[in-house]
Length: 74
Image 1 (cartoon, one colour):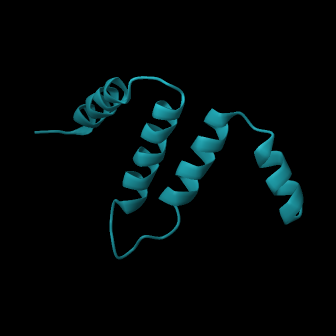
Image 2 (cartoon, one colour; image 1 turned 45 degrees about the horizontal axis):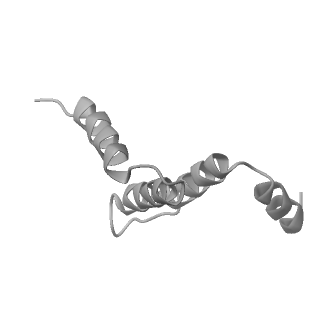
Image 3 (cartoon, one colour; image 1 turned 45 degrees about the vertical axis):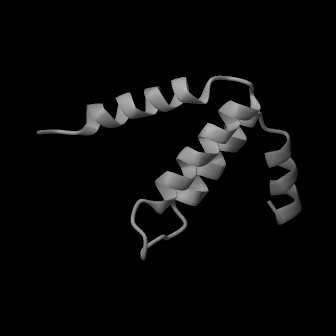
């Protein structure tokens, strides 16, 4: 698959699939000097997609916080 084929396939994906791929690419791009930056960028992209879709970004953020809280241990 060449670059143009990849971009064409990407453009035909659903918005949620494109968002997931962008988030994974950002998360994996090697932010060695700034740990967590990829995750922050992925979260920002996800929040922006919620706003664009007309959904409540605060409700989305609450869900993200609940997920993060579940990962925390005492």
